[in-house]
Image: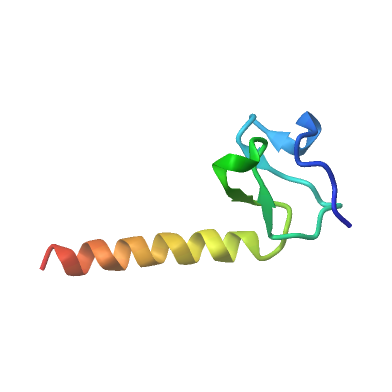
Length: 65
């Protein structure tokens, strides 16, 4: 079920998309030309964010050696 990502009630603090009724992991930002964002209500969103952070940390560790 796709919902309208422009609905202000789906945005927490104006920057985090959180909609339990929207099952997509990646959703367009309010301004579609700006790209996509993560639906933090999706159960896999925290794994994706954690994986991205893990890659950044590992790359920064190996870069400093």
